[in-house]
Length: 346
Image 1 (spheres, rainbow, N blue to C red):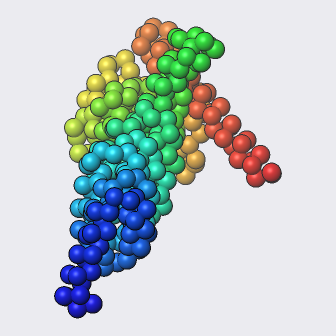
Image 2: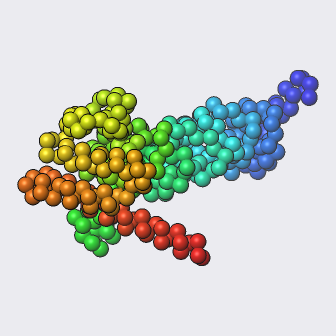
Image 3: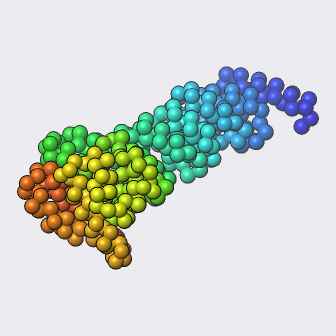
């Protein structure tokens, strides 16, 4: 069209936009929804119309800019937010706005949309806002790009939801339910610590430290399992020493240096020797190129410190917790393996 013809066409469309019959405005929306160069003033007018009219424009129009979509999200109307969530594609900035102010149902729809560009910071924000929403939490767990510390935080919130469930309380009791949920969260965290990528270990360590989860039992279980990268990062975070210094002591430092290192992370003189022994067992296995058997390491550790456990309650409690964690984790791994075999056979 020539510019003059375009102005005349827009004027005619503006008159149709004011028509009192919704059928006219619906026909207008159907005609303009997929037009790339449709007048934005007309489109925005239709986008603020009743839901049948607005939905077509919001969900389909390629002429709407990101700022237009963000304004629609900020308006707070759930039905319109859901139309934005269904768009193909949804840009990073629009997804960020949805993560920040979108309603739960709209955010859930957006997570189901494979054409959404979602930044990690937006994923974190969704987890912060809707971590207690079971449907959104399940969708987040399914994402491969979910940051490990966010995943662990969602595990904690899932455990709290299970412990507070009326069904769980009536079935096994409140105190027992809390214990089962806590053990399940610990198992999930142990599994996450063993499978997380190298680049995400520092973030997970810091998250666990802030949550008070880097307990002596958790740390020594990681060491016994041969998860030295995670263990070293945890020691770096707790001690304030450099990564090179910590790894140097763990790999070939003398016993006095190891004791000093473990005292620096807050371990008392009764628990530090247990960590030194576990480190020495790991060293022997790694130098002989053997795979770390957590069960054998745990058994040897308990045998070496059996007398200490009789004299020192803190050592006895640590070893008991380590054995309990190992047995629980071993059962979980066995169930996972059995389920994988059953699925493969089917």
